[in-house]
Length: 207
Image (cartoon, rainbow, N blue to C red):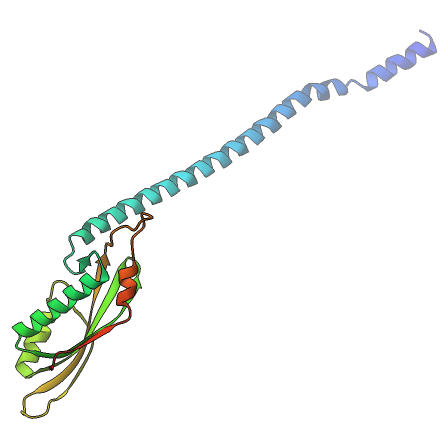
């Protein structure tokens, strides 16, 4: 063997470790792709689980809202009317009927500005009445059980003139009315009647 052949043999024998490395490269590449695919699958499953949880929450909210709507539909406390004018008239009629039944004399009434709170319109009525202790007790008891609801927002009592047992009472009652106005030309509810009621109206019943 000449010197050149011996050198090539030594060089070939010094690179033998490259062959196992070349054989490992496809395996390493496969492991990298497997790890990437595993991480992608994990992220996809986590995102899918989050979306499923969101769908479940939305469905639960929809069921809760439907249940509340069903309960509200049968709730006798709110006044239901197609306009604020009709709701206020019903509020005043219920108030005066209870006063008459308890023997309370309504002297003045005033419709206060309505307040929109969510899906409700808070209607308020201020009145001054004359009564005695027994009538006041019976009247307040009747107000507490009234349907539609007549919530007492404020109450001021002072001694009335004349008879010793007479009382002068100023009271403000309210009701969370549900208004269902007819649709306007554009298909949306017409709230003009509600705006007209917000100015307030006073009636003096003393003659």
